[in-house]
Length: 151
Image (cartoon, rainbow, N blue to C red; front, side, top):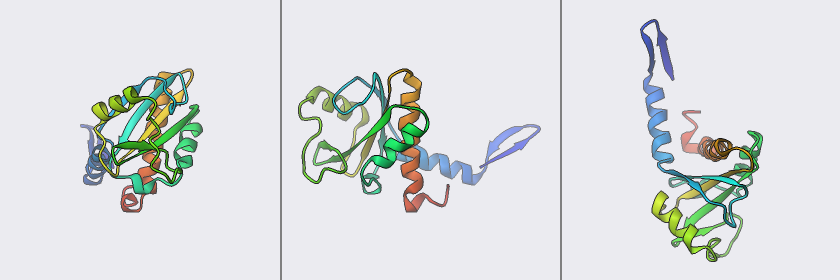
């Protein structure tokens, strides 16, 4: 991924390709206020572009957040302009009772059909909620078969 010399450190082509892939897969992020789908005092959301199909139940993302010491993570799928919990087989909008949160996510993250949003949560550390969301997103990307060349 990198080459270290006396003159400094530079990225290899493989490193540049990985960085490009990560930036296109996780193009937006934000701090999220407490709401019904966020678990903690501190919540951080990342947009995962075109990875809805890589999400199974959301438990994998929750576990990735817990493994780094966070309270957990919530995964939402964006479908038909609504935010849905992955294991829910209906078209139930998880944020129907919180339109202000739905508008905030739409305005800040700009999700499209096929996207997922991962919200990392923690009660004690703001930065840990961010790390939780990003760790869960990286796990999802890593587990997605087309990205296995990089991980």
